[in-house]
Image (cartoon, rainbow, N blue to C red; front, side):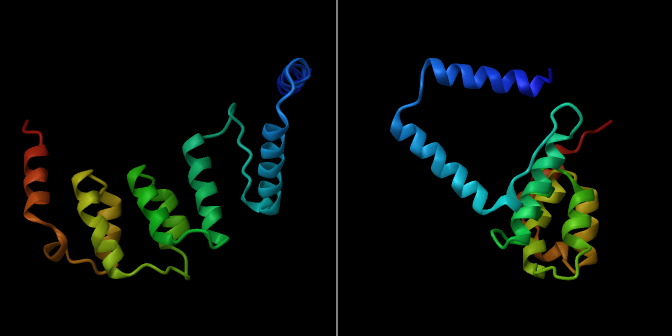
Length: 149
């Protein structure tokens, strides 16, 4: 018997022993119906073999295709998680990129402070001028965070 079958049997047994209230059941049904309306947005993840971080980012990028989100949100997430590989594939290398120079400029200080070198290079290659978007506070933080050997 598969692990999933055992888990499913446990859930069904617990539901028989203590059935949910009608309101609770109606809420669950509504949630399932809502999910089924956007079946393309459902992501199934294998915890045994998959990379959770990649699965979350891929699911989020899939939402972008449906029009629920814009590229800047995905870029911020990829930058925060330091996933330049996914940002390059899903954001930078696409022809329908809707990000402006100002969007990249807003993210440059974060990329510098958090040592996201690949992102910094990409932002500069897109035309961002560090001199125009780095504040004195950013420079001070960078200066203080350098480890002296």
